[in-house]
Amino acid sequence: AALQERGVDTAALRTVEGASGTAHITVDDEGANSIIVIPAANARVTALEPGDDARIAAADCLLLQLELPLEVVLAGASAARAHGVRTILTPAPAQPLPAGLVAATDLLVPNEHEAAALTGLTDPHRVAEALLQ
Image 1 (cartoon, rainbow, N blue to C red):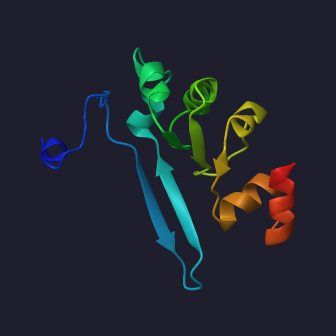
Image 2 (cartoon, one colour; image 1 turned 135 degrees about the vertical axis):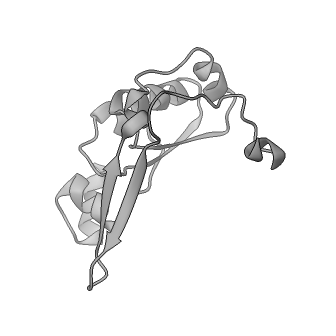
């Protein structure tokens, strides 16, 4: 109700059983962060639902991250690509990406830790070159 009161369209909102997925961020004395992800209900989302393809087709942009199973993220990105919808991917939590997901992504937005995890590199210029290949 609170979302609707603030004008958020909740037509595509759905509920799955289980606790909400959460991410907990810790920062050490040097300022380095660690993120602990507890997927919980997010892991229960295993496929696009009826109507999702049409919603994606009607969108201007699809923003994705990796707190859902990779197969669902890939399905969403593939649907967006098929409909000419721009796809933005924040690859968090960092993990290896299937080639099909990278190919269906228009804008990849990793932070320094995700970029290093994806490429094995830390120099920003070398990371950029590796991600463009």
